[in-house]
Image (tube, rainbow, N blue to C red; front, side, top):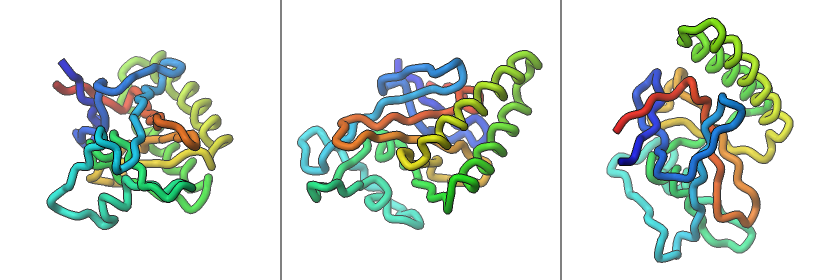
Length: 172
């Protein structure tokens, strides 16, 4: 049975364990999503009936040096919205607020302290490699929603989506 990853504070599906998963330092869930050329016979582009502020195809299509449109399957499947931050500071502030909110929901003081320490360490790593990341939220895109970090290596067939574990819930 496949388990869907839900942003706990807004109850929105933003991933699933149908993708290859890994855990990073007990604080981050990483999902590996295939990246395919739009013309690939295995590429399934979902058309959503209600267009968002940015066209869904603009959000999921990435043009690479070869001029071919690429589709990140997880973005397409869960209708994730790309978030553009003006700079590292804006990202760090928004992510810091999210970390504080999630930490406030953790019942165990020991777990809360461990989460804060590890989440801030992870955030420092993302900031160090900021230019290598893209950022997403669920399609509701409320100010409280989870920030999803995505790292795609050039010419890679996989995009690595990273979520803070403690901000997530599981649903069948």
